[in-house]
Length: 236
Image (tube, rainbow, N blue to C red):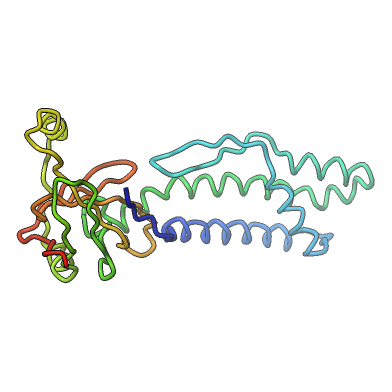
């Protein structure tokens, strides 16, 4: 089976990560300006970076991986090495260490908002979100019950503008195959297509025998799309 998993990048996540970094840097600067005894800026940043280290619990939230910090390991390390030598220096740097640990929760909160921001930017119910760029797309035969065909790229691009998402009964499809009423409903598969830039959406797309049906399968859901014209043409 041929699948299409092109490298991409998650724009909503990147935006929220930048916002998180701006908040953390702003907090560090506020602390730095308010301190009467100011530490070396590089050492303060290093203390914050070490403070980020923690024992965390990772879990999935609406398809996105998030991490919940439990124990401030970095703060403990700095406490052990700095306070043992000079308690006054620890009083200078401890705020930066705790800001580093707090950064875990800043990233957590922004991470929990990633699905919301993502849904505002990308419509997962729109097939064109998954098939945004089909200029170099190809179709491949996956079952001997059908003839070798080629993809009509221009028509596919045009049909995606008005393609209709339809309800489907997957159980009925399976029964038809088991009862030999249908050898294989989707004997073709698409490759070399791209989702909308910045979405990082991965999908496997199967093409129906008549070339007018597309089954877009993601890790979370399936979309069955019907087009007015066949997106397949006679193979060479």
